[in-house]
Amino acid sequence: MSRWAVVLAGGVGSRFWPISTPARPKQLLPLATEEPLLSDALARLAPLVPPERTLILTNSGLVDAIAELAPSIPRANLIAEPRPAGTAAALAWAAHEIARRGGRDAVILSIHADWAVGDPEGFRVALSRAADAAEKHGALVTVGIVPVRADPGFGYIQPGDELSDGVRRVVRFIEKPDRARAEAMVRDGFLWNSGIFVWRAGDFLDEIAAHTPEVAPHLASHEDDLEGFFGAVTTSISVDVGVLERSSKVLVLPGDFAWDDVGTWAALRRVRACDEYNNALRGPVHALDSYGNVVHTEGTAVVLYGVSDLVVVSRDGLTLVTTIDRASDLKTLIESLPPHIRDQS
Image (cartoon, rainbow, N blue to C red; front, side, top):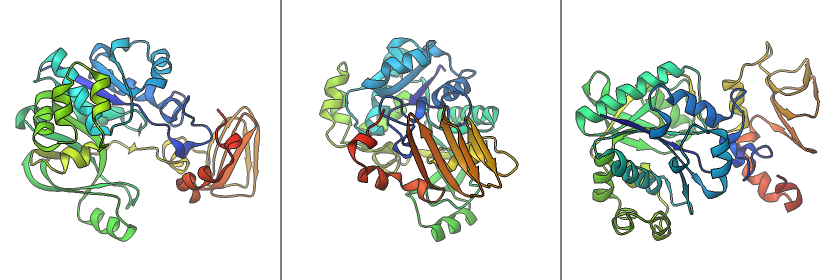
């Protein structure tokens, strides 16, 4: 069966302010390696799926930037969502398009553009196993990450009965828990909900039709009209809530390949090469007697002396200084800023 890839590359990544802006969002930034996160994602996929069968879903304002970043992807494969309508609608349109081009039996590997993966080969092995399971069982398959800590910032998956070789039914999805519950779920063998999904186009479209009234009728009535479809979907709903939590055909298999969603500046201590004092540094930085800091500077020299657990971000005359702990809540800060500071791009 032919395999296709769908890369979700919308959003602005406001948690990476002030580097991330609407014109240059998180997925276009070199946060984990020297290459932009989207470039890393496409390189990981390349051995599995050729460019002509790779779709990138984004917003209209980013199409030109992504086309320049990924010239091997045909322009027709850059799908610009006219307005945000949730991942259920985005993936439904992608499956509809792939079924039109490659048939309902085409297997879709769906990932996000803004992850870090320390073991790319392990990642590809997991996706290949998921593709095999999707074909064998006619199911919607997700790869659940084996947790390395009890993180309340992630959703979790409870695996159930085993069908074959580590492939299990999904008992339930759990949204971001508190820390105590996260610790209990890790002890009980729950997996992180990574957002890696694999299914045949036809199977996914059938589940959309059966379980997602927020999306299904609009897909049927606007099957050749992208703008009409996204304009008709008035309820934004995620694929997790709109499809996976409602379907009885969802399977999970474990993945262990140093995955990270790179959700905040603090994550860079996990995904970047750090110095001997656990500082994650990018740009002209000099650190003395300083431990566990994250510094990202574009041109401006930054000097740290005798400080720990700080985040320092500097670009174009604007510098952010916060702590590792507070870096996960930049939304509060951004909302408080005057527009001439907040909206610098």
